Length: 373
Ligand SMILES: *Cc1c(COP(=O)(O)O)cnc(C)c1O
Image (cartoon, rainbow, N blue to C red; front, side, top):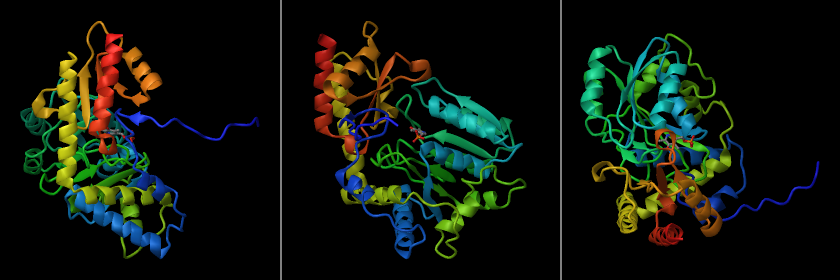
């Protein structure tokens, strides 16, 4: 083999849709020594992680842990466990991640019923109720709380009660909201809620925090058919994470669990209220400054995500060229549009450690220079 240089990636300012900036303490946690995954010291770390995740998710669910895999593994884990062939699942679709849920549900052999809204808008709860009425019995309703492809926040307060009324479980994707916005699993009556480490938690990609209600777990345990995925089978994973049995299932990615533990400690030190306030404040400063440059947000203020700001690209501007120059000349990464919105928006992530006034001021001045040149 030829010689390769030692790894030395640039230090970017990460203001895209994820991953976000990683705190030095989290990098240090990644570099601490590996121990065995059944070592009593590691088992204690798993217990601590579960306790911290229950706090962050706002839940008392016993089965709360981190799936070994990125946010998409969390999505897959949510559906493969509760959805069987022949089931019907209603999926809210107003962006890329709603579409990904549709795909996962169909791969489980279930009928997926999309309830749609225009990209950049939230879903109408009345349409969800209509679909629940029309498709009885419905196994689950699945919604993306923070749609990263469009920057829309889906209000979650009334959906849980609606699902209970029709005997359906509620599944929520909180990959981009957890640790950036309130996520109240028990209060909102969410049955399965998953997230990812690389967005507002400011960890590297690699784990997917997830929580299952007792009812969701009971459904996974009493299925007619075997759970399609061996790796993501929560009935087996529950034994590994529960402090009574600790049965070997797979080797937990030790270093990533260390990293998540440290990231959660940072969230706790800052406090949730202050952390949410910081995300809101920096987004408001960004929008205010971009308006002065003549750049308009895509999403109505009422449902605009502070952690992912979708900005309309003016007609005469080559959006990809601006993004390329931001990266090459200013070391800043932002995202482009996906699907229907490709070429039409920029996606500016202000997630976790990336959400700072300094980053906003730097990005705005870079954009001002590029747009005027
Ligand atoms: C990023 C994201 C995912 C997928 O997470 P990966 O870490 O890329 O696998 C799923 N849902 C939403 C809303 C996301 O933003």
